[in-house]
Length: 276
Image (tube, rainbow, N blue to C red; front, side):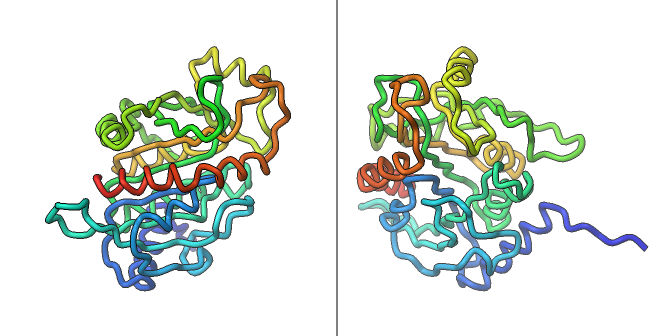
C-alpha cells in the first residue's frame, strides 16, 4: 500500500483553511512578504485583526534569520481617503523561509502558495539587498523589474512550464510611482547564500544585468506566478554590494539600515497597498 504525499497545493489549502479559522477572515485580498528591514511596515498598513504564530499554521515554521518575525498577521486596510471602496484584508507573511535554511524549495514557496489559496490576487515581495549602483545609497527603495535566479533551483515540479514574461507587474510598478514618482527600478539577482557574495560574483552579476543582489524573492516570485498572483517586488538597498564600496558586509548593517528606513519606506508601502 502506498502512502499519499501531500502536494504543495494541498498543503497550501490546509494552511489557508487554518488561517481562515484562526483569523475569522474567509478571504484575503493581498499578501505581503516582509524581508529584512521591512517588518515595521506591517504596523502602518491598518488595523491588525489577528496575529498568529507561524507554527500554528500547516507548512510554516519560525524563520531562523534575525530580523524576520515568526508570525502571520491579518490586517484590515482602509480604502484611500475619498474612496467608497470596501476595506481590503492583507495577509502579512512575516515567517519567510530562505532557500539557504535547507528546508527545501517547497518550504520557500509555501507562503505565496498559501496566499493564493487564501484568496489573494496580488503579492508584494520585499527584501533587503546589496546594491550595485553607487547612486543608490543604503536606504533606497528600488522596484524590481526582473530577476536572475542564480540558485540553481526552481519551485516548479515536473513538466510545469510557466511564462515569466512581465513577472513583476508593470501595472503595480506604475501604482508605486503614483505614490513616489522618483522610485528607481532594477534587476534583482538571487544567490543561494547564506554567505555574502564575493566581489567577483558581484561583478559577474552586474555583467549579467543585475542591479541588486540578495538571497530571497526570485523563487517566491516564480511560485507566485504559477499560483496566478500578480507580483510587486520592492528591494531596500541596505548596503552596497561586495567590492562596490570597499567596506566589509554584516547582517547587523542590513538590519540597522532597515530600521533607519523603516518609517519612510513603510509609509510608502502602506500607501501603495491602499491603492492596489
